[in-house]
Image (cartoon, rainbow, N blue to C red; front, side, top):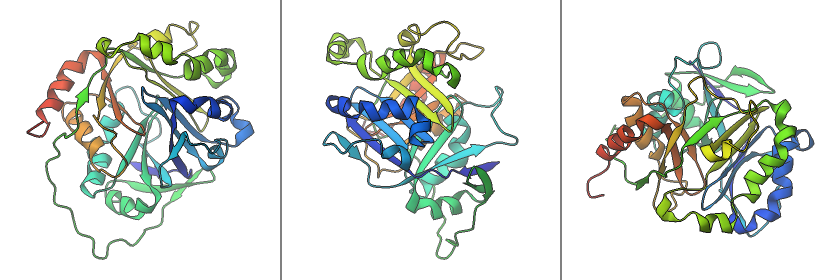
Length: 329
């Protein structure tokens, strides 16, 4: 298999809910007018806490300086696993499950922090640019490493990190953060970029205007329903994650659906904001799911992590993860 190191230099940022109006103009350009920004990698995810933005350097220029904008203090690179001839077929495991043991676990073993973005099309593993030499050394035995340059994949240069390299001691990875599962059911979907103008007004409303204070107040914690919406426009491909109620607002035949019309339940990871320095959080969740052969999408955000698993598997998922929790939790 090939591991592609994409050419985008990425920033990960958080926009506070109360400051979203200041950034809306730039975000609308990034989502709906990419030709005006030269941005090739843009993702926006709304959670109850904030908006998480992942964006390349050209796109980052569209965001204004603001007290409401927090930026993680590193440049990130996106890695993408490509199996023998391109896109995954329906017979292959979906999402983070298929790379849990070959990519996520080895990076965790080497104390390399990752930030995950699963989309309808593929999975992006974000690593800090400064960690790339160790990432390449860690994964070079499993993958053909290719660097994307001007859209073409070329052999990645060896980084010569072998001197003094110590094979890590493999240790168990108990889950140490609280887990919760909201009541919403979610769809992972896409749409043809040519149809984007026809639903642009609706999408803007969903992104920026449907999650206001009134709605948040109306959906109490007791109901278990949370606000979560993710939009990605990466190299021309659109990915959407939204709850089932939101999909009903779209016209028929606009959103792509899988043959099974699958619905997904969420496992939310974290009681307090997770930060960016702790290693192994994605591995703690994805390894037990891979062992149980349960497909999963995984979306990291500025404060918490989110795994999406098939609706019918949610009880077995919770059981598997609870079994893996560290004692004393």
